Amino acid sequence: MNEIMAMLTPKTVDLAGGGKGSGEVTPQMVAAVIHDLKPDVQRYAFLKYSLDESVKGVLFDNCYLDTVNIALKGGWKLKGDEDAGTLSILSDMVLEESINPSICSVCNGAGMVNNKGSCGVCGGSGRGTGISVRKTAKRLKVSKHRADHFWMDKVRLLMGRYIEWEHDIDSALKRLTRTG
Ligand SMILES: [Zn+2]
Image 1 (tube, rainbow, N blue to C red):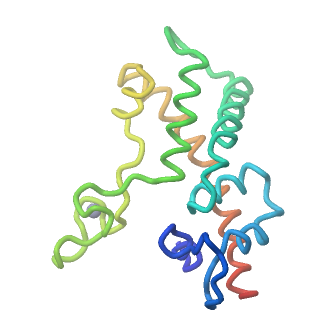
Image 2: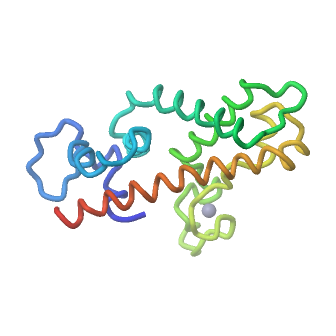
């Protein structure tokens, strides 16, 4: 997380605009530096940094179609009741976790526990456990064995895609610090 990312929260971004204060990051400024990225990556950035919620429907639809294509190209062998609906839930689940990562339930995302130092559960990262085998099994309505031996691999694959997107966004946003 760089400083620009930290500034891109609903609390610090003045969506009403018109602010003359220096160091303020506006959606327009972000749009100006990320406009070379793929449209879905731009939508992802707007949604992740709470700049524009209206892109959500299109982004989730497009990511679902991508997931179907990835599944077809990868020759995923669906079993039993698994179908396009399962892929849809998988796609939404990974995208939601990527945009809005779960936080550690012990330290509430702070990484510290009551001035006792680093949180032992998350190792001070403040991050939650992400998408577990149990969560995957429950959401996709499959057995834990099936989740563990088939679906977790797909979760990691899709997750990796959004990590790449975030790197692209991060590089683009670094230009704000340089020009700002
Ligand atoms: Zn913690």
